[in-house]
Length: 554
Image 1 (tube, rainbow, N blue to C red):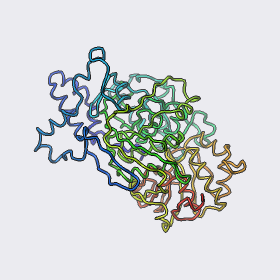
Image 2 (cartoon, rainbow, N blue to C red):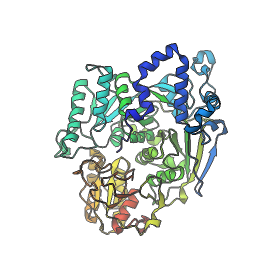
Image 3 (spheres, rainbow, N blue to C red):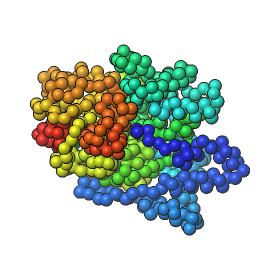
Image 4 (cartoon, rainbow, N blue to C red):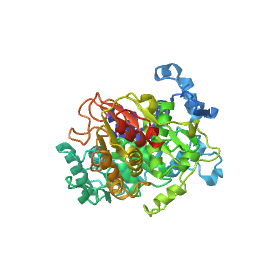
């Protein structure tokens, strides 16, 4: 599921937060315990996977940060090399001088990345380096119907049954996963959200009371990651945490955004801060004119295919270059959305005029964007010539199982799914409609459409598709024989209850604009999911096979 976090018992970082009072008490008498814990946390996050090269990519490594490379020793060998490991950690951890105020040390000389700067601001420190553990003040905490009830329970257990949240205006609660279902437990989760929000007087609760017709619920939005952006909760330079792994979507706005577990969320609800490790940064430079048959989904599938699903584990992924600058905000959101599929801690794109224009009518809250310094240290740098890329898919059963769409032309499919936080935005449906319009044909397999939010649903029915003579997406979809656009939600992206719209209850082959294709992800454990862009998904619907969209776009 989208919020695939391990339970606290299997999460060393979660346990650290749960037992924080004991840790703080211990450090007063045994300062070496704090150093030991910092070292342990650092070592666990220090390994990386060296990606293979390709004709589209080059990689440059900073020798000054070699401690983060794959040369780090495996856990099994740590006991035999305690002294050498200790020295390596000490050499990378920030020096004590970083805690001195600027008035004492003078102006800061060491350059920082965007993510390091955001952490520095949020922790009220003048300087930070990768590997440091700092208390970060949170600007926005988001939770939803899947993880909200658990987070509330932990909050009340640790802070008291009558405790109040740290800031009622900085908490965003969005029901969106299991909404349009008769499942009583799923419905009860939404009731728990409502009760908590009324008790705490939460300002931003996007409720739904009448599930029979979402349109009569003016507060209901839909998929949290798209709704957060549409409602103005994503702002440059801020820290946004959410109980959902795809919270990293918001990094498209130049902020630090990442997913956390229920234990951490329960703590943030009461304290408004969280102990986080500063991640090192991988930089991805994308240049070249974007071909008219490619979308951001193809770009992120290319990257994940290069570095693997563990290639960015606990690292920041920063996207820059002329291609990235040319992308719309929704396409940038797609790019950052799937950094978690590469193991990334967060994805981030520098804020620019495109960002500021998008935010003009979304928020009145002042924000301060930050940018990587010219001499900032990056763990690795990858360069892509986007003009040479072709439409891609990720074959079952992993997002890094990359292949050219044209190489899979013999794969017969049973259905197509267009939706989710990754592929259910307005521009995603516009892209699919463009392919259907260009073909003038009808789909050959059931094609399901699930708008991410209520606003996207309205756009599908109201905005004219360029070059269509005034036709809307919904009209083009109807003419192509697609299913009627469903109520906005996560839908079948992560399976859900058996009555979830478009859920795969039988072993089928599906081309999907979603983000994961693990066994059982969209329902049946034997289902086969090919991840693709809206262009490729629409083209595949027209043929009944995995299809390169250039067959219809050119």
